[in-house]
Image (cartoon, rainbow over all chains, first blue to last red; front, side):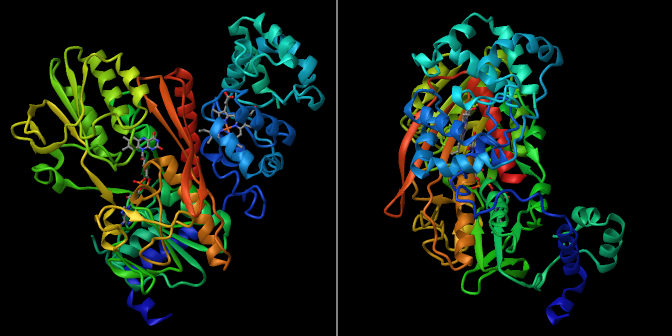
Length: 206
Length: 419
Ligand SMILES: Cc1cc2nc3c(=O)[nH]c(=O)nc-3n(C[C@H](O)[C@H](O)[C@H](O)COP(=O)(O)OP(=O)(O)OC[C@H]3O[C@@H](n4cnc5c(N)ncnc54)[C@H](O)[C@@H]3O)c2cc1C
């Protein structure tokens, strides 16, 4: 023990003891480290999308485990204004400048983190039937189909899924895109409360 | 400061196994009370900037010892605290612990840094000191009460509620108690101050509350600036819902008299109030001033735009509201962004690697009533070693959808700072 240690024995030991106690707590599971080329490029995202894209809120989508092709497309659409979203447009442009491939690869490599928001069970139940038309493009399990440009719907927050369906319905997401004409016609035929059920269904799937 | 006797200490620590220590211990410290064993970063201030920086140094290199000095045992969020004034939220719902940081391996001492010795690379805590290799200073703001006559003497009789905590709750109580037909005065200082849209959001929340609960009461906003300084058009539009709100630009409050319940503006106009919320002029936290990190005006700390290292003292970085010179608002989002970037550069510098230029980002949501919000979003880049703004975007208007996104932001960023 050094003399400065000894001089402090009483009260200082209190601080030391406190630190020792705190030191016992094991560090949390380490996320992807600074060696990942995307590590600093995603610094901005965690303010809204959660740690490593594991969003815990109802209206901001989960990015963890998102296929790279789809994340890249989404960023390009926001940057070009095809998906109007004040929160995303400036950051999408920033991501294109930083290197969207690194960002997309970073989130694609994270384990998928389904939303912790548990939708109303009755809505989920109704949604199972109402969601049948979705499977033509998004697949029987809703896991998405790259060849059709259709993303994975499962485990996204219900509020986010509903918002997107309403945007498609109003033709404000990718307005006038001929590839989406049929999909939008389908959504227009579905009343809003039923869209909420569909959102609940896909949010509940894993 | 209580000095715990050795016996009392042993009793507490034996009983509580840590928790007792945490609860009861504020011992006097002397000398080098935590000798350094390896590379060490000390962070002063566990608010938005400092807590983020502490966490991200650990994420960047778990081998670096990180010690955080923060007197408060719990973190209370200023963002969303205007909703406490309108009764929409409780202060408790904005309060979190520091357990998440500890789980990352950050050592937290609930103590105040009393001085900094840049030449010896030490932070003083009373009679003791901590050595550091790099220091991050994030003490937020302090009030320049001397700028308003009568303010220092008024103490808690004139509330700022500009650091979320007991004053926020006290102001909410005063609003609840105001007579219908009463006058509430909100005074906004000249820039720069913490959260440029904050006072105007507060005006919305107070007006919303009064409109519903005290329909004959009135809110008078005295603004030192000649116009609303943030989201101008959006706030003007929001205020159309509040005929009980009277906005008086270019009215700087220079005097307050809590006995007469009266404020005086720089024009010499006197105004009687039933409730006053006087947001005082501001400067960097006191430790930054004491450590000679502030510029000639004695208010704010100028930093390198890439590393956040002080332009005055090598090895000391400053993040958050205390900084000046970047074209950015003093916001929680910005403090969080600076904390992450600064941590990354500190890790690199300690490893002998050059810093990596990275620009921060900003978003500020403002609540205009109980459910609707609006936002401003800023993107920046580094140009010739300086942060420059490349884009500023506003939500098209106020909406409940933005309100939901504001809740999502708060939840997510609180985790980013603390979990
Ligand atoms: C009403 C209101 C609403 C706001 N709304 C928003 C919003 O919606 N969005 C947004 O982005 N921002 C908002 N802000 C701004 C935001 O709160 C600040 O920008 C943010 O807190 C700045 O972070 P900081 O780390 O610089 O300071 P702080 O968060 O204040 O942290 C400073 C910490 O340092 C500690 N400290 C001080 N001195 C010492 C010392 N000597 N030793 C040890 N510790 C010390 C303090 O105890 C404190 O915990 C709002 C602010 C207010 C007042």
